[in-house]
Image 1 (cartoon, rainbow, N blue to C red):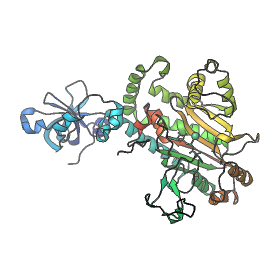
Image 2 (image 1 turned 180 degrees about the vertical axis):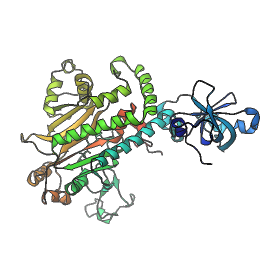
Image 3 (image 1 turned 45 degrees about the vertical axis):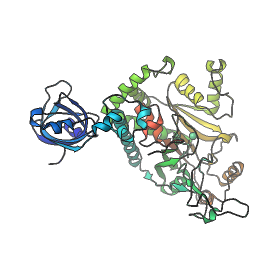
Image 4 (image 1 turned 135 degrees about the horizontal axis):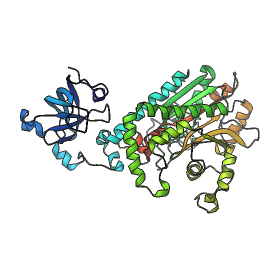
Length: 479
Ligand code: 4AD
Ligand code: MG
C-alpha cells in the first residue's frame, strides 16, 4: 500500500479508509496519542494506539523526532484538537531518535531560539516555523516562474562563473585552481592568471544582468533566477554572501514600464501567497503577532503579517524621484531633531535608516524611488537629460528597505563608452556587452529582486538567515 500524505488526508479526508502514513513524531502523549508530521503540511495527524496491542520496547522508541510508519483506519476524531485521526493497527519504527542524544541535544518539544536553530541543521527543518518558511519559499519560486511564463518571458540561465563585475562594486569571490602556496608569477611579482583554469581571473557572479541584456535584445523578454554572490562584509539582518536573485530584462521598455512591471510582479507574489499558503501563513501571522509584542512600541508593525500582504496588493506604490525624497528627508522633523545617524544631502547614497523613514514613517506604503545621481549608481544605467541623474529605480518595502534595484539601460554606445571611462571600466574587456549597442540597440530596462528579501516580507521573518536553508555569511559556512 502506498503512503498517503498528511496534507491530502486533511484536504480530502476519506472516513473509514485504511491508510499508511509515514513521518516524524512531534509528540507522544499518555502512551496513546502520536502526533505525526510528514512535511507536506504544517498540520500533524494524530495516530491513536491501544498500548496493550504493542510491545513495550516498541512504545519506548516512539520518541520525539523518531521516524515511524502508521497503518490504520481514518476516523472522525473523538478529541477536540482535530477533525480526523488514525486508529492505528500497525506501527513501524523506521528511524529511531536516540534517547541519549535527545537528552544531550535538542529534540525536546520546547521552543528554541532562531539563533540556536541555525546551528542545528537537521532540527531546524523539523520545526513549524522553518517548515512554513521553506514551503512558502518554494511557493514563491513557483509563483515567480508562473508570473513570467504567463507573460511570455523566457527563463534564462546566466553563468555563475564570470569574468565581469556587473555592479562594479568589486565585492566578488575569486574562483581559481591555482595553488595558493605557489602561484605562477609575472615578472613584476603579481599572480599570472593566464596559467589559471580559464586563462584569466574569474569570479562568482554578482548578477546575471549583463548577460540577460544580450538575450533580451534578441528574445524580447527574459528573466534569470539564480544564485548570486557578494563578498561584502556586512553582517546585517538583510545581507547574505550567497543569495538568489530574479532579474527580468525587457526590450523596448522604459523606466515607467519597468516600474509597472515591478509593481505588478510584487503584488502577484503577495496575492499568490495569500491564495495558496493559507495554513503556513496563518501560523507565521500568529508568530509575527507574538514577536511584535516583544518589540519596543515604536518599532512595532501596525499591521499584522496577513494585513501587510493585503496592503501591498491593494495599494499603489508611492513613486517619487530621489531629489524629491531628499527634500522630504530634509524637511522632516526627524532630520531637524538630528535623529538620523547619517547626514542627508543631495548626492548621498541613501542609508537604510533614510529608506525606512520614507517607507515606514512618511508614506507608510511601498515606495519606488527613481532618477538617482549618476555617481552612486552602476555604469549601465541610462543617463537622463539633466546630465546629473540616471534612470534608476529602487523599490523600498516596509521592514525590509531596498527589495528591488533596477533601471532603464544606457542603449547609446557613445554615452556608454563615456560612462565606462568615468567608472574606470575597460570597455574592451566588455566588448561582448558593448556589441549589443552596435547591432540594433534599443531602449530596454530590467530590475533585480532579492529573493530572500521577498521571502522575509511574505513570512514576517526578521533575519534574512532564517529564510534560506543554508545561510552563507561572513565567518559562517559550516554546512
Ligand atoms: O540593487 P542590486 O545590486 O541590483 C543588481 O544587481 C542589478 N544588476 C539588478 C538588475 O537591474 N538586473 O541588487 C538587486 C537586489 C537588491 O535590491 C536586494 O533586494 C538584493 O538584490 N540584494 C541582496 N540580498 C541579500 N543579500 C545581499 N548581500 C544582497 N545584495 C543585494
Ligand atoms: Mg541596489
